[in-house]
Amino acid sequence: MNSESRLPGHPLGADAASEADGVGGEGRDLPSSRGFLGRFFDALKGAEDGADDGHRPAPVVPGMVNLRRMRVDDVAVPKAEMVAAPETSSLDDLVLLFREHGFSRLPIYDETLDSPLGMIHLKDLALKHGFGQGGDFNLRPMLRPLLYVPPSMPIGVLLQQMQQKRIHMALVIDEYGGVDGLVTIEDLIEQVIGEIEDEHDEAEGSLWVVEKPGQWLIQARAPVSDVETETGLNLTGEDEDEDIDTLGGLIFVLAGHLPAQGEVIPHASGAEFEVVDADPRRIKTVRLRLPAAAMADRVRRVHSPQALSGENG
Image 1: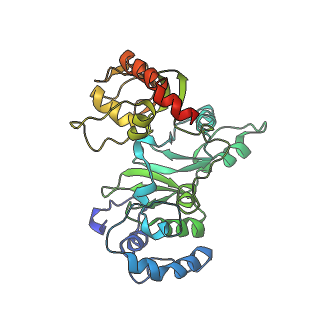
Image 2 (image 1 turned 90 degrees about the vertical axis):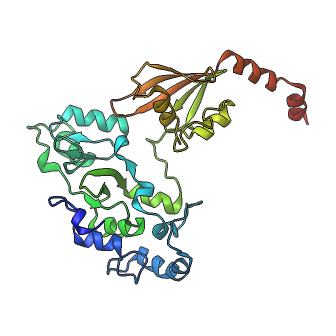
Image 3 (image 1 turned 135 degrees about the vertical axis):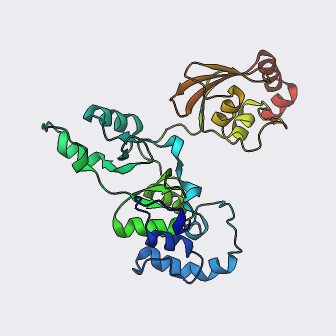
């Protein structure tokens, strides 16, 4: 991102941009304070610099190497999946969002997501207006600052900025000054130590639940390849868009529009997708029903002599 492409008024200043653009060089992209993370960078720098050939290989497992190898756009929550609230939100609106999504921080914007104002922390809201506290509700004084970063910034640089400035949420700003996504400190740490699950994460081990034979309740973000393996269906033919990665993306392409809750979208295989949960921006949950022929074939394969002998062997 060059300086000409940044719009005035967004807090993505020259310091943040130089840190992003200077990555992979002499170490000038890193803040001067050498803390815990800095010592790890020093230990890893020699091997990483020698392995850096100018492109970003896809990380296979979590590890410290990802701090320099991965960029912000690799881990950011896309704009369409962000949970945020307008400045005009009431106390009840914010409580509902916090309760529904289980987050501790929410971005607050003025009219649109491209005009962010800051973030509201659940602790601040609870201390000010919870535990029987009264008083007039005023959101602005409770807002905390956000970080604004380019998508090309290495996640290790952002992690050190969050550590130094004690701001644990960042918005990703595109070349036109608009918001492109969101990153939290948890998203970054997970690239080093693996998935962090808390009491608000989904308890199920996978992205779907078998409701009955031949019928699944599936998260729209589930990879299409995994759904194909689970159901035995071929959902993406050769003529399908190669960029379709998730079940929600496939359904969007099949429907030709963003389907509404309750809408049923047929597939060429005979399967049906029922949109169980959706909002005006994205599909959330889908019910997949196998066609009768596929269901019969699945039952036949399960009860075939080969399958039974394999189980008993």
